[in-house]
Length: 178
Image 1 (tube, rainbow, N blue to C red):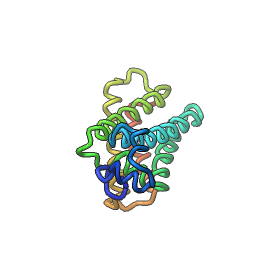
Image 2 (spheres, one colour):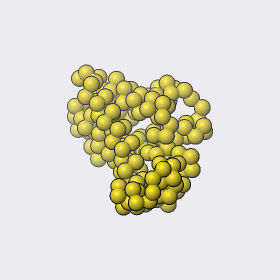
Image 3 (tube, rainbow, N blue to C red):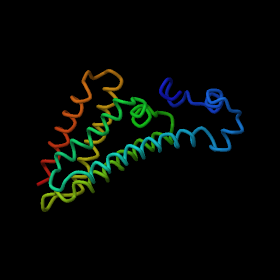
Image 4 (tube, rainbow, N blue to C red):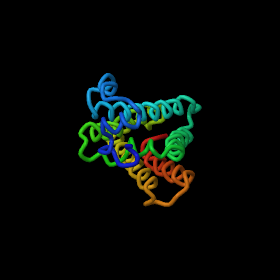
């Protein structure tokens, strides 16, 4: 329902009708529609963050470019295989305070994951506050690129998106990494 008509199309009655349940079952699991939307969104976020964190751990020491390429690849491929993931995480959440907050928090969460991942590769004397701002801008831009691609506003293969995003992340990284 969310991917067909946006988050606002998700209603308690609509969910129950599609699931073949009566309203009572909905309220046994969720306080309201916002709780349902948050649960769905959190699940997609957690799966994505876990996959990216796993990629970071699997990258051999000293290979920051490969780590960036691997993590970007994992994200893009997951959105290519299941475009609904991108719609849920990055879609138009205007009007939903719960989802807007989560989308903004996602950028900060991914920034924190990125900062921890590249910490061993930082040049001496790097201004970490500036680096954080740069990562926020880069990750936010990545989200917008993915959504433009998923909506058809950008024509590219998943490999082209991975290559371009990796190259951009690496350009930013060159200012801060050994």
